[in-house]
Structure formats: structure tokens, C-alpha cells
Image (cartoon, helix red, strand yellow):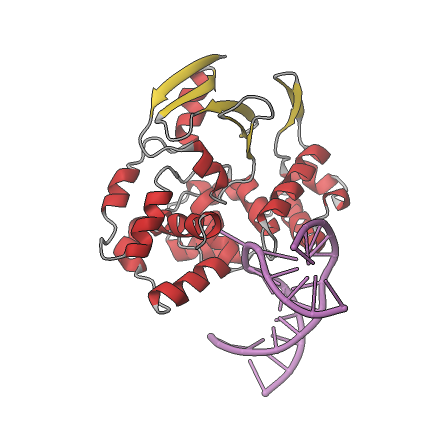
Length: 274
DNA sequence: GACCAGGTGTCCG
DNA sequence: CGGACACCTGGT
């Protein structure tokens, strides 16, 4: 455990935590400017003063190199993406300005699938609450900073545990079915991770899962498979496309990274709504 | 009590 | 294929 401090462009942990793509990055209960991250069964403390480029990672050098560097997508050039935005598009320009510290995290596919199935017809505070309840119910626990922390539970745990205390509502049966199929090998996630299959093939595979429709499938592709061309359209996006783009968004202009653009717009809508 | 929240399954034409 | 409608739960 050590402090690894570095300057990173287009990186703002507050924006990332509030962007709606992840549900388990939270302010540290005691330390200011500090957030906790739990992912891939690991815990990270990360510190960044508001508006600063200097970021401190509290972890081993190995974890930083092998896990967190990739997790936060530090190798991708977000400045280039922002520069490519149509300067005539005032709304998107403003959205990208406000969200210029957002990165599309490389989260664990399994966690993303479960989290975004829970997200349907739900609100973000309750989504986060449900996920924490799941982790406390049956996630592996260990001690960090004198507190108990919980990993995201794997398919076996979710299948074998009574999930009713997590208050998932009608989504519970979707999670149960998926957990059972993954645990019993009927649903092979590694095939999705390593495949370079065409976009529509992967999308159809995901949509064949009980409880996964077009919107959740696109979120899984963007946040769980890092398919940056994925462009999820939810109620927020739909409303903005209607109001600001006359019902048609120029996705093809940004086709290789439309998901990043989507995230700027979505983040702007939920956090800076005017 | 009605309505809403990062939608989807089901049914029906 | 497209449009209604119900749906757990917790908050306003």
C-alpha cells in the first residue's frame, strides 16, 4: 500500500462518481476529497482536490499497473474526443465542457449486467442502495481502514442466496435467472468478453437475456464491454434528442465513440439540468 | 392517492 | 413490427 500520485488530463473522480455509469464509487466517510472504489474484488482509496489534475491512488504498485490504470481507462485520449465535437453544437459543447473529467470505466461485465438490470424503471439513489444491499447480503467481505467492505457477489452467491432483503422488486427474477444460467454454464460471459463479434451479434445475445432490453443491452456494451460506439437511449436521452436535436442525433459523426458523447449528454442532463 | 424513476415482458392488432 | 399496459419499491 502506497500513495501513487500523478497528473492525469480529463480525469475528475467527482464527475466519474456522479456520471451514472457506476454505482459503487462513493465519498470516503471521513477523509475530504477522497473516494472509495470497490471493483474486481479490490478496494481503492483515491484522492483528488476539486478542479485539480493531481490524483492520488492509495494501492500497491502492482494493483495500480494491473488493475486501476485500465479500470479508469487512463490510456484513452479523451481530449481528442472532445476536440472532435461539432463547434456549432452548443448543447454538446457545453455538456462536454461540464463532463470533461469523465472516463468510461472498464468495469467487470458481471457487475454491469446485474447493476443495469436493476436500473430499469428505477432511480439512481435506489439503484445504489439495492446494489449495496446485494453486496452486504452475499458479497465477500474484508477489512479496509478499520471498516468492513464488500465485494460484488458472483453468480453462484446470487443464485444461492435469498435476495428478497435487497428489495429488487420484480427485477429479482431477472437476476435469479441470469445468475443461475451463468453459474450453471448455460450463459458464457467470457465468450462475450473475448469475442470481437459484430456489434449487432453481441447486442442480440444480450437482448436474449431475460430482463435485458435494448437500453440495458447498450449500457452493458458500453460500460461492461467497453464498446465505445454503443449509444444507449434512455428517457433522459430521448427527451434531450427531442428538445435539442429535433428528434435526430448525429450519431454517425461520432460513431466510434458515440458512447462517450452519450455520457457527456446524460451527465449534463442529470447533474446540471437547466 | 397519483405520479415518477437510466425499461422490459407480454399481449394484441 | 408497433402500441398499450402492468410492474416492485420508495420518494415527492
